[in-house]
Image 1 (cartoon, chains in turn red, brown):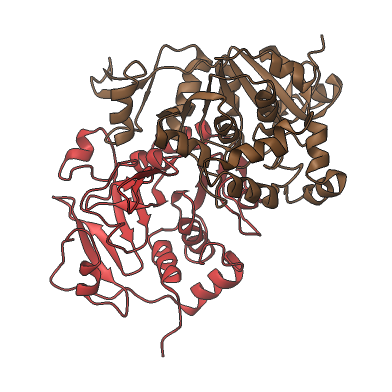
Image 2 (cartoon, rainbow over the protein chains, first blue to last red):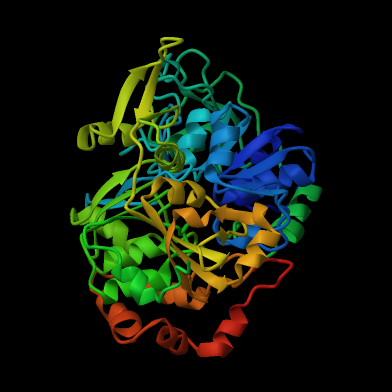
Length: 254
Length: 299
């Protein structure tokens, strides 16, 4: 048995599973959009989806090119503003989950979306924060989705755009920040964070990988528990929802 | 009193060196016709600010009209990076003060309310703040909450000389409706010394009075009003027209290399007399009809 699914589909499903019904979720660009709508359309019908620019609870019919595309605002219950969403909902402390993608992260879940080195040693300026820093700073917990590559999971990132556990231990709380990253979901594994050191630790590895595959393709050594389970594969109903309803044009799942 | 003027007159009211707050967000409600006219009139040494860097800022930077950008990062969504802004940051020709979206919105909000500063939770523990402390020490400071004695980051208000806001509907006095999300536009207009309203459609004041709760920008903030259909092209205006993917892709291709912007500006800015000539150039009524939004979908 076993279903055919892509690594992106498993990442979206794993992300969706992290969301509990009734939670308020601030959603960033890309795969987080698929994961959030998947949760909403399956086990979490009462969750509230927020987009930073002023959108609450949209029901898109068509895939969009990003948060600035009116396709992703369709059938929203509220269309308002940054101050209303990132301010009166997020900064106020009403966001349970921040859902972010990133270009680079380190063992403390700090995210870089600002400066990325190229092979010639030059730095390229990228998208920067948008609402990502605000979400990472103010949400009760943050889920990060990114590709599993050594150049993305780095010992030291070039720039901390959005803080995770900063330098580990108590440093995030000392910076005055609540919450912090709870999960990092890649195409090979799911990670959490050690409650004391705040270092990234393996929670499960995706079917078809070994612990050595996972650790050997990272730029730092995560904590590895004595027993590492496999991530549950997607269910047929979840794959059908992604393929037929959420992303039929494969804008996100590529 | 009518504040209706031509785009050229409204743009001419902005001296070089001004701080201009732009209403665009990535690829929606960008001040594109406005930016093209600023470039035609060779207004320069501008400071531009917005919560999310957008195509209006990128075009102005590409044309060399901007010395300084105060923004929260940005992109053209899936179409690509803000190539001109990023290149300016990389080669040092553009002074960039980079925040998060909410911290820019809070700086506008403090400006709008006449507050001396505003505390915020964002930015702490990040290199965005570290860099601001190094390069813009007058705009960020750690303070003690006088009540709880906790430490907070305080931001200075943003007080632009002029906000330029592309809206769907306004009257001749500048009372303006924005349909769809408004991102930072409400606070931009209130924080700025004055606002220029660029409207897809001008209506009688009586239409505004019939539905005043839709008014996002009161006319008392507004110095000039311009009737400017398709003023955001090639970006979208919710409920009026969709973004023009072909035209945005053309811009992305043109700005990929440093010299590419020159040919783009020749073709779409300097080579055309005004906004109507631009609309003819991109395909005229036939193309614009293709982009018209479905009233139910909004795009």
